[in-house]
Length: 258
Length: 281
Image (tube, rainbow over all chains, first blue to last red; front, side):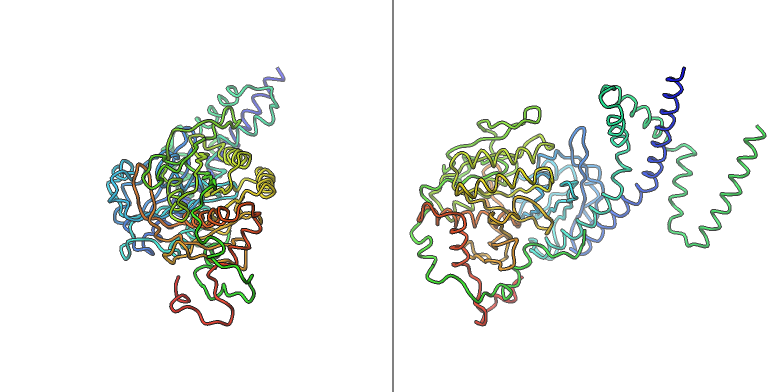
């Protein structure tokens, strides 16, 4: 049937779009992580702080997830999730207002649960929002400057500059991070009410699930290898390109023979 | 986004740049608020909700409401949740420190539903303007382009109704509303530890500088801490506005702004700076 053929072709196209988007995300994802890491490394070192971290907003369920951290007491924060309606990070994220508190460790009521989960309870904390064109996407935090018990206005200004660098890194890779959402929006627009939300969701999850099923598969290992070539010079890249071309030609011949 | 933009608080870290040749004469602080305690003035705090029984708020909270979103539509309900973060209570404590007899009204717009926070903020603002609040302290802002005309309309309504809107500027000089609308009293922090030290910035959009570094504040669950941020500078200005309106009821927002600019601590152009001020950061 014609309709079935159309549907099959559309699904194949959708999978191809999803696959390309996922490859781009895989290639870029590491870059984003490294950029964010370099930003918290620089922040911790410049402020001579015990810890520095970046938490990003993730939906469903709404949460702030600490992605990267640096400093002698930073490591415990990575992977920590907090509600966006709680604590300093939550306030700064929700209001878009930068904030620093001093002497927080002496108050037993202050964010103690979240702090204890990281294994480090700070005396002072400064937090600035990561603001893109739409609003907050996350929070950059610094804990305990060793040289001073509190944070100055200049400190807050510097932090805001680091935050804007982090936001630029995040915005650049956001489309790739949200493959599923992007596909869902496109489908909804095209279907113009003819498909239910549940149907669209099922379709999108089918497409994206098959893509990310086997992160250790030979295909994804190949993508990782390509990503690791980024730092090479032009001559080395040309050489790798030549080798890949030979391998690809060999693969084509093998397929024809089969 | 350029990483080299200066923060909105930058003008207030170099006091010599604030020198003015002309200012209104004959208006002194004594005329503006001498003897005033803020009695009879209602100050609304659009924020995370006030902790009504906090000792620093001294029983001055007369009403608490919250904006709830029902299927995306905002509605105003009585609020008994206290302060979600501690921030609103901090602002309330600062205002009472300057104007101990004002009546505080808590308008909680921060809550569980993050997606509607711009809508909730606008709804809280609208409720306050329509319910006879004289001064509103806003430590929030929105970058949403969709809400730009909504805030523009609300800010104009407040202005024509005589409601003074005092808003903390964001730390980064990105566009954010309503703090950058011309009728709003937009405030950034300076670092001089004096709740009464006020600067007028002759190069707006941010017009006023007040203490916002290492400010001792009230915090969640009856607690206290020390904090830095533009959102702790704004309530100092809100407190001064309340004092002026208590002593001179009926002044329009533009007249209150003129009074604040006249009594600000800016040095006169050509006159020597008070010792030590020029070097402060």
